[in-house]
Amino acid sequence: MTDPSPGGPGSLFTQRLSLFPITTGLATHPSGPILAIGGQPLDELAERFGTPLYLYDQATLDTAVELYSQSLQEHYPGPAGITYAGKAFLCAAMVQWACRRGLWLDCTGVGEMTIAISGAAISGAALSGLARSAGDSRATIVVHGVNKSQADLELALTSAGTLVVDNLVELDRLVELSRMASLHLPKLWLRLRPGRLVDTHAHIQTGLSDSKFGLDFNEAAQAVSACLEAGLPLTGLHFHLGSQFRDPTPLAFSIEAVLDFMVAIRNKFGWLPQVVSPGGGWGVAYHESELPQPPIREYVRLVAENLAAGCAHRGVPLPRLQLEPGRSLVAQAGVALYRLGAVKQTPNRRWLLLDGGLADNPRPALYGAHYSALPVSQPERPAGGLAWLAGPYCESGDVLIEALPMPAMDPGELVAVPVSGAYHLTMSSNYNGACRPAVVWLAGGQAHLVMRRETPDDLLRRDLPIPDLRP
Image 1 (cartoon, rainbow, N blue to C red):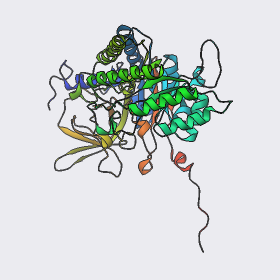
Image 2: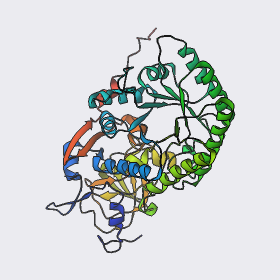
Image 3: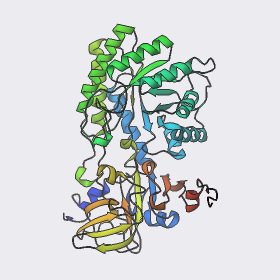
């Protein structure tokens, strides 16, 4: 793959640059142009905070939310909202940002709920407790989970606004808990399993008939009956087909199936949901070969218009439409910054060995995710052949990017990997004793450290010695 006219409209540099946050540009430097995001030269950020380093650009996040909001206003005539998926990336700063933007927070498990509650408290948002003021000031936390523990349920019941019921066993536990006089249950949604397939990796398909997630329509009917009989606050239906898909067409069939279920339930029990959440999962371009970016407006249009038309056709009142975009809100806002430690030439490959990889981004190993990259210094340099970008870990699968056209590079140079905002750090590990990277938030021309780098001392804090076992 060649690099036509570096810097031109069809150049490899220009294509890759479009994968980066919207504030990305070039800063001047005595040695040549330097990549900068949010007005911050990346070499200076690496010097200040170290590498590997993750960067989040608030302007890119804000733009994505605005695009979703405008699309919903344009295409859906009823009430609508957006939920930020905590599993994409969650920290106190992200919760603060989501609260300020009026987003709900999708959490799974005690850990994510605790981060959400803590971050919301910092932002001054009323996300926890049972307080009542004008209307309902309970949490805008939406709790998911395919096998919620007792601790998950206990925290959700006191701190969440909505709990999404995954299975009938969980519902039985909720019925028992509801009999406690002092307990006020959050609103309940039922997670449905529509039995539809979207075109994505098998590991991130969630709506199939044999998926571990959710209730089939017969089980869901039993759940509606049980909720009504027990007087539980059942208010919504949820389904999710999978992640990183680019064709929204299967969603139309699932919406039709869910609407038919709603009519059947109305006819049998006289109940209709106040909220319908068709999940999220809209894809993003990770590599220049996947450009242009999948249009968010088209995804929202199909969901909104099909739900509105289907309700009108069946004489069903419009429910609140609650979308749950994860990566399409946050992925492009994130960049991973690595330092090149060694260049190695094998018979058929040029290896660029980085100081991060599998431990902070397992997606290439798990899903075969296809990334791109740019050198931080003089990023417009023409490609000098193919390179394999790999990490320092003792796994042959620790390869971030394969066969990527890259210029000649020297040890010590910095490499920036775009579209790193989702499902990296939340899936990261301490493999080989790796310490998780620091995270820096870029906003208003300033760089703010929002997650400190782990240290070896952090790795030791959970360890306890065994007794002297000598005979």
